[in-house]
Amino acid sequence: MDYFDVAIIGGGGTGAATAYDLALRGLSVILFERGELTSGTTGRHHGQLHSGARYALGDHRIARECMAETLILRRIAADALEFNQGLFLAVDDEGESLTDEFVEACRAADIPATEVPVARAREWEPRISGATRRAVLVPDGTIDAYRLAMRFFASAASRGAVIRNYTQASGIEVTGGAVRAVAARSLRDGTETRYECGAVVNAGGPWADRVAALAGLEVPVTPAAGTMVAVEGRVANMVISRLRRPSDGDIVVPQRRLSIVGSTQRKVEDPDGLRPLPEEIELLLASADELVTGFSAQPFRAAWAAARPLAGRSSEEGREISRDIAIVDHGKSDGVRGFFSVLGGKATTLRRMGELVSDQVAAFLGKAEPCRTAKFDLAPYADYWRLP
Amino acid sequence: MTQRLRIQLGGQAPAAGSAHFEDFEVNLPSGATLLDALEYIRTGVAPDLMYRHSCHHGSCGTCAVRVDGKEVLACLTALDSLAGGIPVIEPLRALKLEKDLAVDPGALFRSLPKNTSHLRESEVEHYIRFEDCIECGSCVSACPVTARSWDASTGKVEGFLGPAALAAVHRESLNSPERAEEMRTVAERPDGVAACEKHFDCSRVCPRMVYPGKHIEMLRREFART
Image (tube, rainbow over all chains, first blue to last red):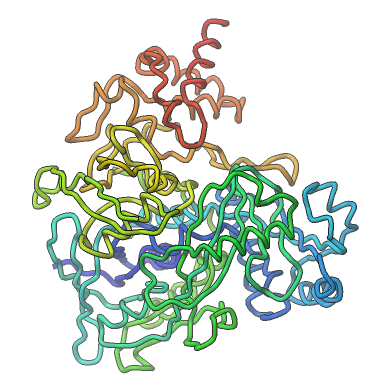
């Protein structure tokens, strides 16, 4: 019988960062993902490395957290980031009158935002909208979402974590008010195996409620579909955002030889098999044209939808639900000790999500080791596949 | 629209049975991709269908498959373009089959030179960009030389490093002049540039226009010059 200190369910960025964090603390870890690693939400991210500026006017704490994580990721995963910075453009009355407040809010969150003359912004990025009235420089960037997550997986595996893709958790065994084991079924051959463990982490993202249901519990998640559109060609090298309160279609992110506009948000019941709607694609292309001249005239490449893992429940359209990270200790909330859910969060803060849930898991298991994931360069992502 | 697909299933894992084909019907709106079709099948009649995917816009390189014998990224292949027949969907060649359409990309990553950075820090803050190669394995699967010398049970290719590795060797020698000698030593191995037979199928199937064949030719010319 195999025993692991911690079983993690969910092989996206959060599961990857959690596996690495716990392995660095000297705990034995096994992770289950029903499909290929990063095949859920993580890989479909539009790729913005958030300085936090986008959240500065709304949520100070998230803005500050994004900035701190940006600085850490630039140190530990430089080659998975295009750090070209970002411009926030005020292209209408709302943006123009909001600019001073925006810069102030950024600075209050330790984000070094600086207003620059529009002429200077245009020297950097000639294709920004002719309607630009004010421009603010912020330390945004681009993430290779897949390779950043794979660097965490490679680092976790190199520290002994066992990563099982195409393996679906099929049951969480609870006896005497504590988790005892996870059953998991391999898609490769259909066999089911029981793994005893001391703790279980639910890193299911928008599928977190299904993972919790394996233990007969409920967690509050609101899956929200976000549509993105990629066109061929880099319309800019910097991330271009619209200076207004967060809304649909106000970010253009360069990635490789592509440009991506994101995103929309609509509540969905089922995070599986999401497809972009034609009206969303139309809206995104029109919004991008208001930021960057001729965006929609670039050759179309792809449109896709990702399920966002918003924590909490809402009857609203979803934009108002917090992008904050929430950790649920089911020992305290539901009387199932050793079961933890990590909800919400963003691609930029994946390492932090791993840290927060691992702090609680390590404390539960009596392991007094601190988080060290911010200290070391991550292993090359290719190492994950390179290892035999 | 309704579209039938003939998909290779099974393989490798003992209980998965030997590889065989099954037809599936998908019903998706216009604009859907082959990857959407695979998602449709997995979330419907075949929940255990194995295939690789992540970004859904041709950046990650995980979803390469063969459609009627030609390597494509499933996420960039419009379902409309397959209308009028029953396309045959197979996994990549020259990589170890896991099951169905999923391959183990390990052999590809082991063939690439080590410690090549995907993104190099530029001397200027702006205008830095990821490498074009997304390591999807299409070129390795399409190359007649690797296809001929490939052991299907292990995924091992003997006698040829392959187009992806040689393109990476050339790129690294340009990106890191201090490693040019080391890269040249790799390229000059008998299973390096000399093993390429100039079929150029690699360049034809590359979804990111890396044109590995061009990089191999540039290496060849460098050897001739010095």
